[in-house]
Amino acid sequence: MKIVVAIKQVPARDSQLRIASSGKWIDEADLAYEIDEPGAYALEEGLQLKEKHGGEVIALCAGPPRAAQTIREALAKGADRAIHIEEEDLGLDPLATARLLAAAIAIETPDLVLTGLQSDDLGQGQTGVILAELLGLPHAAIVMEVAVADGSIRVKRELEDGWFQHVEMPLPALLTVQSGIRKLRYATLMGIKKARTKPVRRVTAAELGGASAASGAVIDRVYLPARTRRAQLFDGSPREAAALLVDKLKFEARVL
Image (cartoon, rainbow, N blue to C red; front, side, top):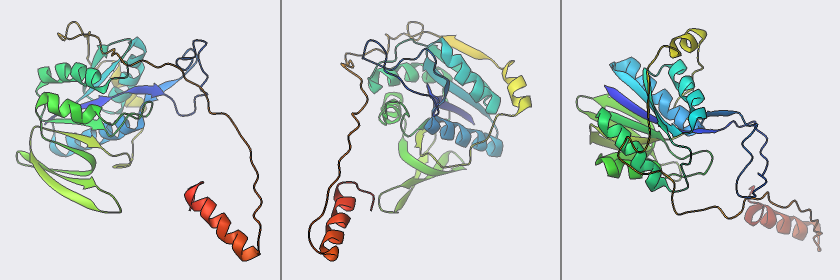
């Protein structure tokens, strides 16, 4: 089974974010980067499917040269090889990004394509399903379990209010994977050493026959929310004040 897993490089969760002097994005000078969490779960699912059914896992990442660090992390965890679409500006348009990914994936003709449910940085959840449409593949979103049979897969999808849906579909197919589907593995010392010898194919948008992923959408301003403090006293009896407090916690603070 040939599995392509699309991953993305994002700032590490413990990074301290500062607004750039332009006011249009964050200052990336001193940031550490890692695989986005949804992509890490998609990679883990791909690796476990390979361990059960054989084949290979190909990590696919679009991004600037620094994304090579994220690709090495995927290879160290067990991916067999990687494709790096070298693109400085991925822009804000998931359609443009999906077109780049689709051009690289089409060359591989995989049995299964896995992506994270949504990106950690911009919160985009459309890229995976757009990618499936561009590739002409059946797809399922918010996937919690994957079982492979002869020529088909059966997946468990998470719905609202604790409900799930089981769907069977033919291969090849594309799945967007929910975070938490598996326990993530760490890269071993042996895996890190082997990653240095695994092949990475580097391509540009032009070589894939497409244009840059940059889109017409632009960010006008990025800013931190203003910190405000406010105290409110409730009149009436303790019972009445408690009822008002519960309403505030439910409908304004939304913590109940």
